[in-house]
Amino acid sequence: MCGIVGYVGGRQALPFLMSGLKRLEYRGYDSAGVAVAGARGLQIVRRQGKLSALEAVVTAEPPQGTLGIGHTRWATHGRPSEANAHPHTSGAVTVVHNGIIENHLALRAELEKAGRQFSSETDTEIFAHLIDRSLESKAVDGKVMTLADAVRDALGRVEGTYALVVISERDPEQIVAAKNASPLVVGLGDNEMFLASDVPALLDYTRNVIYLEDGDVAEIRRGKVVMTDRAGTPVSRPQRTIEWNAAQAEKAGYPHFMLKEIFEQPQAVTDTLRGRLSPETGDAVLDGIDLPISTFKRVVLLACGTSFYAALVGKFLIESAGRIPCEVDLASEFRYRDPVVGPGDLVIAISQSGETADTLAAVKEARGRGATVLAISNVVDAAIPRASHATLYTHAGPEIGVASTKCFTAQLAALALIALHVGRRRATLTA
Image (cartoon, rainbow, N blue to C red):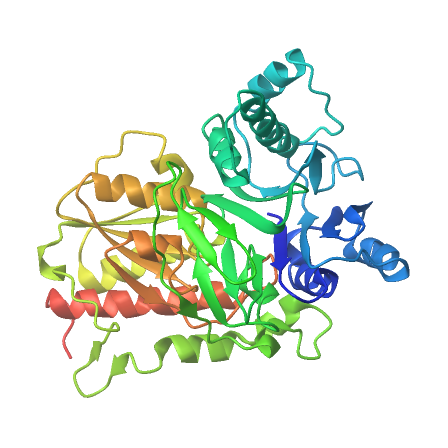
């Protein structure tokens, strides 16, 4: 879990990068860094430790430029150190990355055999070398290759998950971004563009966003975003408007986000239930969701982490109210076995972020086998809601604390609504 930000436009990039990283600091604690392109060329500043260590350096000597990327890290490959902090560079190419390259050992061995020298222990540096090598090799062959082409070329070699953001000194007015199973969102400004791994980083600057889909490659300049798939075919993604305000992502006077969010639980539950309970009919109204409840033979709940514990409670609620068999499966295990699921099954996928990679993969597996999928998510239009037949949203607002509190209780409220809805349609509950 790491944080990414990016900016291209007419103003200095550094203030947004630091502001965005502060909003995403909960995503990474061991190191942070920025790369800014301007008249002085590309300036990269990285520091081990909390964001305050990086802030002290860039405050004393700010990198100047109107294009930049930044990252705050929670170590996966490579111990916490300045050398392992992002951004990583090879030749003219600089990258930041969230996710894991599963075949990194084989790729690193191949690149080192070809004479490439690594300066870190991270898997992310492999991206920088692959992209730089693609740009160099095609130039030698006399072919014109854009940065986006080189990114696609590199992605074809990589197995794993990524939210990848790339800049090049050869084109200091463009950012290229790519996504697979790790969230990335483009913020739309007035002749300027923003980029982040999570919406709170953008809220002081814009509420108009485009969510990247898995396989998307985005070419971002001041005035436009061009979206393609991995093959280079143009794709179109809808513009969304974020309804959260910046104050919702702040501590509101509490010393810690987690404490603030504990006290927000009553409001989160109230907001999740509001408008969905009908005392007149003794029923739950689920935002226009119209699924053939009476035809399902079984319910399968899929989730990871804290959402898995909510699913365990949901099993008892739904079986008790709806008198229908329920199973609970860890999404990370479901996707790696040969699950018995198909037509006649209602699969309920639970994820606070709506981006949990294992749960998303399990949803795709279940849909591919003919099951009907209902998502429970706290983030509108995230990947899991988009991959599901229908979604019941919790209304908990952004949860910054790593230990889930209000989102967990809001999930329980949503599951109680579903249990009531199922019971009424299966005639196992009276009004």
